[in-house]
Length: 293
Ligand code: ZN
Image (tube, rainbow, N blue to C red; front, side, top):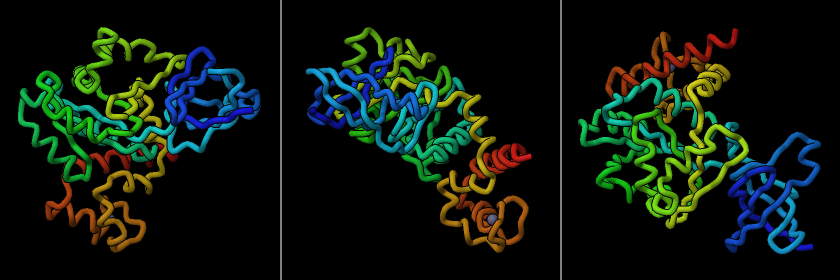
């Protein structure tokens, strides 16, 4: 019997649509064993399938996942584009930092898109995150400024977009996927549908090769629960810019909050680290540690 390997690009009503390297899509059911061991294939999974009839098959096995998002289920995200606006609404730096820490904890690479550059100076925000080591793109959804650079960064990757309401997430997505927008009468409408259901998840392919998932990522409730579950000692690993200093403090178990001869706090005082990022770390550290007891 023929077997093939591909990525699950759509899941709906108990069917999994597996796209092979050749571009061919096979409609599959999952093998009974998945029900027995409690695992369930999901969109993003790399699947080994058995071809039963032309165009029809069975998912036999799924590959190890790099990461997983539960609602809706999605595996192996290469990156999450965190959309924040320059103004209207003002960016909430703590919420952004918390979200970035959650992505790092989940091994999801974060890219930052700053929208509405016509409404104010983008630099206060872009500087903070560039200095923290993130790739930051300024996007004007109306004029298309920055869209090509973001598209280039997403090439060949499986990505999703997240952002609070009003930040212009839909206009960024529309700008990078105009073909789909024209075909469906609005990608945001199409992506909005089924957002809260676990039954239907689908990946959309950009001409440049990026796969876009219709998931909002994590809700505010999800992020708080994830932070509460993080070991407070691990939190420093989710602030990439701390990496050059951790391990250089006087105490090996330094929390970088009150301890003497702390390399992180020295870097903060010398201006090498950004204050808002450090403040978010301290606040998250308190949230993470409170949850342990
Ligand atoms: Zn320290």
